[in-house]
Length: 379
Image: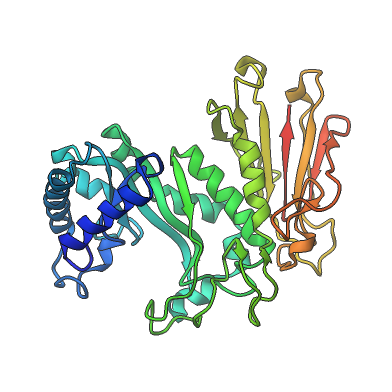
């Protein structure tokens, strides 16, 4: 859609169907971040109404030309944050984007911070990033968009996201702090009924911004670096890799899990607690099957290891049964060492587990969570 040439879109879709196959294609997105087209790829006044009209026209032509099934397109893919965004899911739903029965799913992109310009770069810091209140307040901006998608019987996904746009920030997004940000962001997104979140993995774009902080190369927020480089060091997984291991086990594989952010504890303001009910593991009337505790209190490598420690009493949750604990930890929030970022005692520098797995037990019904650390409790 960006180059305004429907024939290119037709050929790309045909090639995807032929070489990838429908079994691996959930939906097709026309264009990327169309809310940034005005004044560049489109005239300055190009609006959400124009996007909606183009979407309806293009999907009709492409569906007929390629004999596509209904509901095979992803609508939106906008990147500018609400509430000042010029195009949103709410807008295009109200403008009739459902009119041709082409929509399968709605998407928008989220980047909480940025290095695209000096003003935003100045506030893209670890203390700002690893802050539960900041994370929830930011994602709350998308509640109307999620509701709009659900009102049409469709899912809302975050089609692209990370913590800091324009390819992250050195000593911020390549730290263990990014793991904590990912865990809190993904779990809170799930609690808001965001169906999927697709983490951006790639490289700095030369023309992304004329005043961006980064120069061409891999992104500082990448989950892994596939080849050794002078700038990024050896080929390896980043310290943030372990966040996906925590999230995977928290959600589970039953496809029956239900997740909620629990009310905050006044005495532990930096603790985020996500309860996961999973009837395949534990009857809901007995309580949650799993509990993720994220302690976002700042503990740096140079700090005492006892900084911000939270003691959480879970004896009432076990109901006399046993509970096991897996821990996501590192020497500190600002650590960039993948070898010391661990999940259940194991590091994943090469993408596979290294070291002996450590499964802990509650101590007299309690678990201690250091600052800048997380645990997953299995009941």
